[in-house]
Length: 210
Image (cartoon, rainbow, N blue to C red; front, side, top):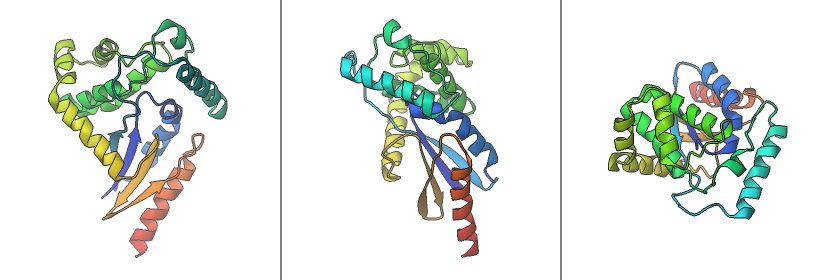
């Protein structure tokens, strides 16, 4: 078995843009490749409002992505209807919480957080938003809330951060294919799954040949 690590952050706008292509990659993988999601953690916890310069920069990234990856949509009302904070760890912990409570819903809650953030102008830096989103995908409110605040979730998220660092990941999204005791960075083309799939096939074919 090989493992394809998908290192991402629910509040990474490029991860949102990559979603359709990632789904094509995941559906085309051979059965010998297992997918493992790793939460990258763009920005740690903070209660401070996002500085104006950072707001302008990130809102500008959204507009750039809409052009660079056609079909990607953002609700720009977020910047006026919410009080943005540069804190993505809460959203990452929510995905880890889902993984611990019910691994089959990990992908669903990640997608729902993205929809709430990018399409509905809701703030995933707030635990209240994350708990509401968890209820949307079928979790019990009190159980999810308790687990979200637990030390078990913090420990598991730290392990994700450490794994991402060990894989040498410095940006999100990233794909890393581990085969045996070696790992390869996999190219990403936001508009075409073929580049990633070609890299994966090349690694697996070379390994099999040798």
